[in-house]
Amino acid sequence: MRAVFFWIAVLSCIAGQAMILRSTLRARAHRAPAEGVASPRLASELAWAVLPAVMLAATLVVTWRALP
Image 1: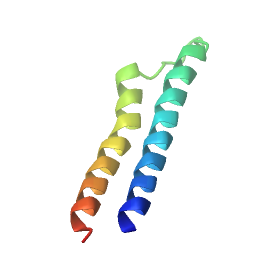
Image 2: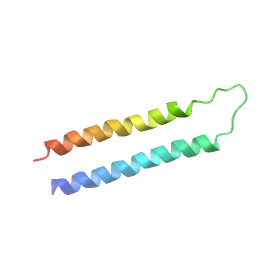
Image 3: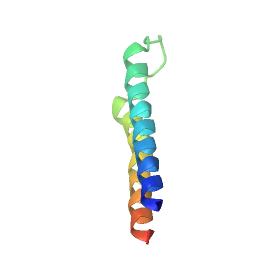
Image 4: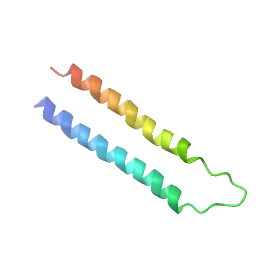
């Protein structure tokens, strides 16, 4: 039964991270360049969007190994 809850949590996390990445990319595509304001680099924006996903994946792996 614990495994069912774990996989529901995994799917929820994947969906959430996918939405974060989608919103990051869409906001960048729709952002109008303002004069005199430096736009953040795409690599930097993606890094800050992907880093939590990587850390969450590591947490999920450790949690899966801890389940009896």
